[in-house]
Length: 455
Image (cartoon, rainbow, N blue to C red):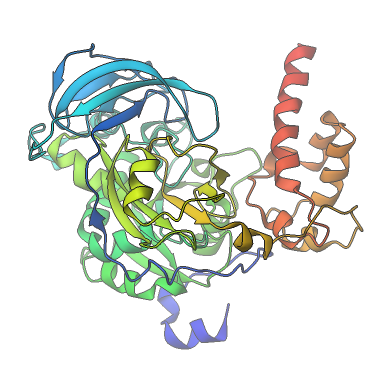
């Protein structure tokens, strides 16, 4: 723990930390001080049926149908799925294939937004959350189309349904936002602390937890204080501040830092009595469930040197990236586009990809910005051990990388390949410029295919 953090924050409000990790340049100053602004609606919204982990949604609408803002337009297809709601009042134009951030085109509902419409929320009704049972809350979470808004887009109701023998006593709310550049969670904690606290209360009720801890890094102490001011007086919720380090926001790192519990290899947080949820997801729960509404928009950080007007924007789900960039001073040319943060995000090949529920940010870099931060080419591994010292999971990325190059994918199990959550620390510190994370992503897919073929 840093001496600076220790001297400024009372002991009972300080969290711990985890071993290893890295300290990349934060670069949050471009948007951290910019309040959330509502973004304009485009003429058309492209609503992917598959923008969450699990089975795609099933359309409930047909071309030519009129829908109002907030109305369900696609239903969940089973337990591992969530519904989709209309982000704007308009007309269903068609159901077609559209580009996605990862490349392949996938089915989507194209909604033509009514021009001149006020886009007043016309769907939903007030309900008493306190009168609902945990089972009813979990069903309401699924009905709202809630998924992990931190990037994974894992259906939230599934996380609220741990195995029967797992007793959850503590809810952890992840407000660390350790990825460089991104500031959506920071602004949400500053501007919507009441929604965050309400969402935390609902999560505690659904899981039967006795307490909740909202964790944030010490570069967001203003957010910690904003949330602390609206906490319930019964002491069931607390805010803890931890040292800034990447990847502090990962589930296993957060559990270690806040409550000193270690989530087992291949296990879930509920195995050690924890439920871990992102700030943005929790705030949406607090804002939507009392009104029986669904996810139709989210806060997105759009930033980077290749943009004139970086900021935090409330954007309708399905808004094309091109529409956003054209209004924020996109400089054009051969830019590098990344969805998510620079450490774990993916590159985007097309400007026509739509905003999805799991997209918390877009970064726009110029070629010279990327060239200044990368090794010109990849060199052979020199076994320096820097990746081993950086890995927060205490793996051996060096050995895993060598096995990947030799395509010995099954042997990588011996070195706990699937404990890697692809944080990028190893690639970040590698002096040889080896793209270790990319190696591991490919290796996981090949490992699964080989095991399936063997069966």
